[in-house]
Length: 547
Image (cartoon, rainbow, N blue to C red; front, side, top):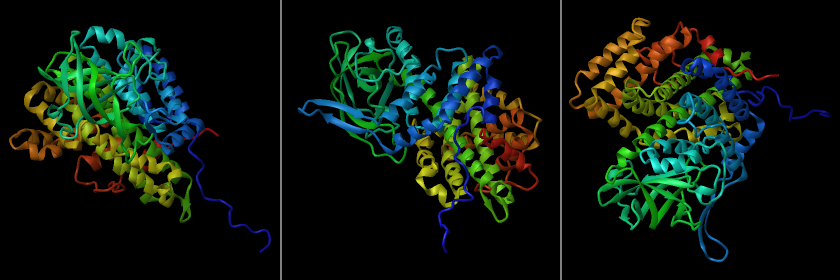
């Protein structure tokens, strides 16, 4: 029929673009206010809104898609046959990384309230593009390890905490800023770093060594320096390996191949060979694991924050889609069953955000009780929050129907990224065993945890019952290894519940306690029990894009 068309597009949501990711996240805004000194709050909010506006812009979203669609490429030799061992990135990668460095995402250790403000920024920036957050995380996390050697810290810390992205392989002393990576994992060891076989032979100059060995996983191989574990005469030891030596020559850093990964595709992860590679010892010989423990704690916190960021973006996309999409005579978000799904996802996201920021605040406090809390709460949070990320991302994609399976919707990138943080920096069993070790060896860690959850005592009968059940679990640690996952899950959810009961709106805390701390919730999302104020929960998670 003349004049008709089959290509009129109706009933599709507008793009979720052009908004402040920080300001639109009520749970994050409130957590920042809760954990930031009043005299800093205005400055921190302004800084985070700048990051949020950038992350929500069309330009950054375009860069993120380009970086993901054009993964890095390895060049082992130049045109003349000289070994160069360089990784080439799409220009979008450098733009994103420059934005992240300029936003202060490597400065957690050197600014007032630094860990909370950086944690919030990291959570926001992960939503823009998670791959570039890997070198940002490792650079920030390297600081506590380097501080075990004042001379190294004096030379490197100003570069690592610089807010200038100075790309290119040159001697660090001539750069305005530097990035760090790490190479711990070996084929035969994995998380068992004491099984490392990379050998470190002392050189004539005090504190210097030659490394020989193969690292199975080296992230961000174009960084300026790396923390590496190797076996010195005195045992496993931490080393700093610069990519370029002070005289301008390249260190021996032989890139064998890049990993073809499920997600995190914009970021390069390589296998690297050391063959007489120059290294500087960090800390004492034989104390390598103890030296890097601060770095491990910081990167594990970033795994929690990164998962919280991915969940938040997945929920924002799902709620946005369902708030505009019509089906069966009304908006999808207003349909009782879909509302249940969206509210359930939103509750999971908010619980992750509240817990992540609480742990960042513990880093800022630095007191003995807070350090003790981290020894138990951090592995529990790393275990649980990172494991919840994948089901949240998949369920959010399902909220978009078939559209959520199409790459250009953005949800498949979140789905592919979602398992990463549970695998990196020690998978689930490692976290569960670390928490169990803290319970057995450090009674002050449990004391700090109980004091924290005790602050919510009497506020919700379901939380109180869950705490009582937890006491029963903790009463018998014999044979606990086989039950460690169950216990650590309970540690994490009770801590989340205590935070939400104290600080979240009543409808959010009510939904969490009813579904996570009792037997009244189902095994999948969208099974919240009857009688909750789900409309308020969904509205809290909704992004309102400026007209």
